[in-house]
Image 1 (cartoon, rainbow, N blue to C red):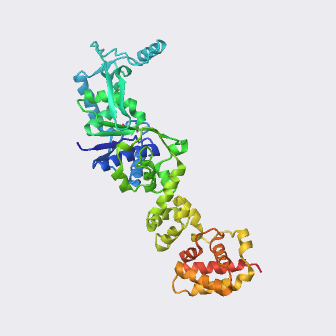
Image 2: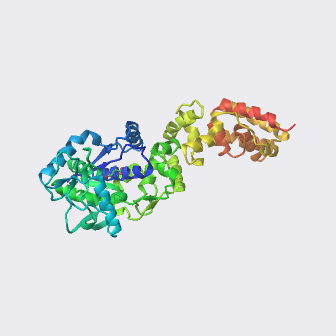
Image 3: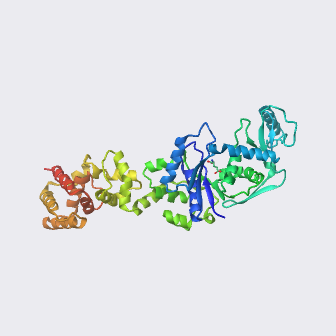
Length: 460
Ligand code: GLU
């Protein structure tokens, strides 16, 4: 049997981490089994559904590299099918019209509570045939009257519920709209979904849904209910995938991080997208809740900042620099800056922060550093250094390094007396990467100009 899985968000909000993890596990399972990954938009909540959220969900999935093979399929396009299935169940006597008024139902509910019973529909209209004419009705499904329902869940194992817990729930409201637990089953059955992978907050629904499959003459799919993610603060929980993107996280890192929210492979932490599709399987999806840990996400992202080819980092970095008002191209010089600075930054936003001095000379000089290193007596050496740098045949870190060593030897000066003034002149402070790399990563004219300007800082 071929694997067909679906991710079924409602389009009432953006894609956030919890749902993105569900989508990812569906996607990875489809890929690892050579199956089909389908996007179904559950848009029956007319009040809250929005096209813009559909677009946003699709955009987020594309960005994460998990575009669906089929869909989006919209439930609102399938209303005829749902009504047809309701009619079919009515005709076959597997569902029935219920004429209880909301007041009657409320009275039954209150009585059950007063008698210490769990409130559930009494089944009053299950066998009645004295249907009033023209009165509003709902359609209810006949649940089995005795026995248990067991599902063999890929994550939770065997879970059993006594049918006593369930009641004949409404599948069609009095306004003619079908209900969630019904349409999901019609969809999953008609779309030939083989595995339903979703959050374990849906486990209770599953016991209601299984009898619906049977009523429709369909075989229930295999279920996999993923444990929820703990530690999602209100902010992290409501943050969309695009928020993470805009905060400078890399899609590979977010996918890598989310894959580990419930799944593991030994103690390996870093996975390429290809490795994930090769290695993913439900044998290694745990039953206990996973924990959202921002520090770990940052660590995984910093690893991916180093693992991606530097020119790719540069390409993705451009919009972040443009946001700061720098006009840059993803060319070799930007790649060189990315290469030099990326291990100092956990995100693309941080990369911009630590690299600002490459794009702007509008910085303050660190006064304490100037005081300590900008010594007038070193002026001849520094002037000589600038001259030789300007005359270098090739502008590489090695060539720059030889100039520093030669000048240091000739003037009998320790390297710090040349390196620190250089750093201060180029960046404003003494904290920067290896000075030879730093100098060589700058455009030569820019480096020389800043060093000349720095001469003014030498105390008189
Ligand atoms: N629309 C449901 C949700 O977003 C999907 C449930 C399911 O996957 O069956 O939670």
